[in-house]
Image 1 (tube, rainbow, N blue to C red):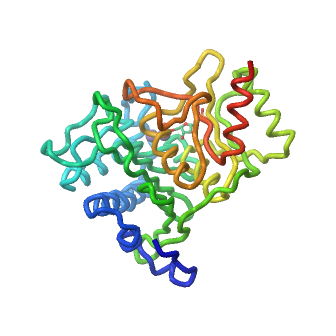
Image 2 (image 1 turned 30 degrees about the vertical axis):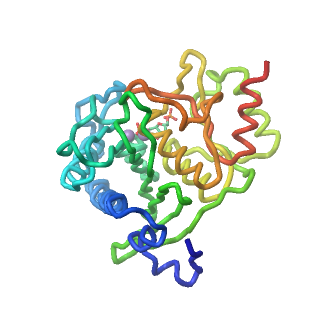
Length: 312
Ligand code: AHG
Ligand code: MN
Ligand code: MN
């Protein structure tokens, strides 16, 4: 794909970018429809009552009204897209057969990531995975695209279809225009974000953290997975980890809805993601609620983490 000069970036909108990148028509239209949904969810955030909905999700976590309404917005948008056969969401107990049964794509969603931060006005996000097969089918499905939307001072959208990773900003006219084309991580960065309580860190993880601190890495952790990942991507390096913890070997974050889409995006920006042993993208999920430890970011730090975690 031809490189897009800085001068023209602001005039390349999402649809044109995907067309120039040779993304096939149905996938272009699906990504576009999901990006548009981000505007509706953003509107919901603005008029949200930030209250609990009185329901719990499959993880036993209190759902905000906003979690459920964001999920409903996505479902209704995808139901009529004509391209989606199954929809699975962090807010649903099971896979929803949303299409007629012959559609090409299978979508996973964390409709609202970081919902506990809504009342603090910190950035939150939506995470989407687009698969070529059922996510819990016999065959391990592959991600053909992944995207996330960050609701911050600006609304930004990052997507990859395996041909690089690209960022768009929603402009005043309500268009997603290109802001970063082919984001490429450096070999190593200078920031780290860490979930979990220090008192629950395993000895190996603690040694890795102490190494980062001895190397002068700066702590960047908001408690929102989307902005915390976005920071590593846009700063072109560093590492985010929500590790295995004492008494919680799987950590907190959800393999299907959060980790695999972000691992796909980071991989196509030259980064990598592991659970400490294997590539996050190589793991075949066994259940919707499967969690996994995660180390994700630029190659130097992720490889270093694996060294510390597997020191015999
Ligand atoms: P969600 O709001 O979709 O449940 O996700 C919250 C997640 C993720 O955004 C973040 O990285 C993590 O929770 C923060 O966990 P702690 O509150 O334990 O730091
Ligand atoms: Mn989440
Ligand atoms: Mn969520």
